[in-house]
Amino acid sequence: MRMIPNNSSHSLINLPVMTPLNTSLAPPRPDQPVPVHRINGMDSRTLFAGAKEVLILHHGEPYRLRETRQGKLILTK
Image 1 (cartoon, rainbow, N blue to C red):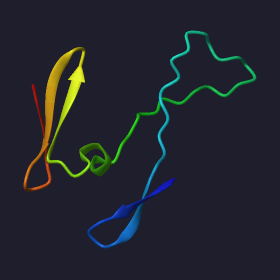
Image 2: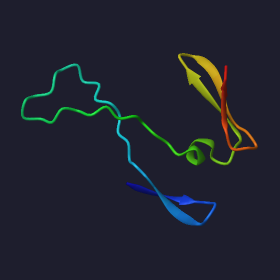
Image 3: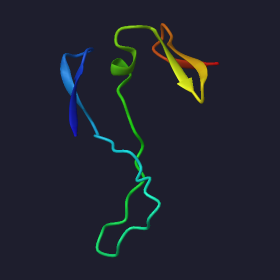
Image 4: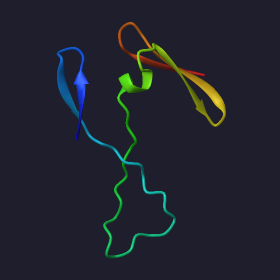
């Protein structure tokens, strides 16, 4: 777990530390644990870094991720 500051109450919140999915083409060896599918994660405050909008390039196409006044996220192409 990683501790992230919580701006609303000046306390810390727990976020799981996430690791990428094992992309190896070789099957796991019998003496190794089977990899668990995990999703990469990021706190939105880190992603936005104080801005209200970020540009995401996906397969060469630009997408805009915007935070509304109500704190919701909108993704548009």
